[in-house]
Length: 121
Image 1: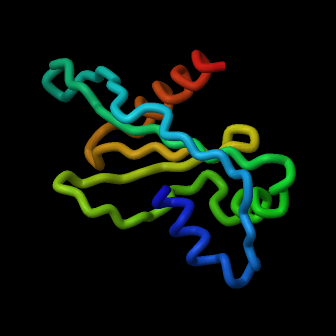
Image 2: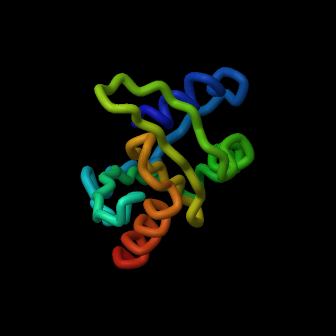
């Protein structure tokens, strides 16, 4: 849970956070989305979806993170051989974190993530 640990470490003292019963799941370690490149060849984008669900008893914590994170790109340093980026957004009381290759199409990946999450429900 590198993103959540990063946020708690950065904000924990100010908030006096005691986050309990927060559910973390890595929904899929390697999803694939097909896309066309500039030469009209099909390329595959691979990405990872993580989800952190805040129970109603942790409303104070989730509200804090909703104002802190919003739907803005969250910068997290990742040691990797490939350039990795992530975007985050809220879906109900769950924080969705998507890791992907920096050069892949974020809009296509977000659309694929939404389709995947709808199929889980």
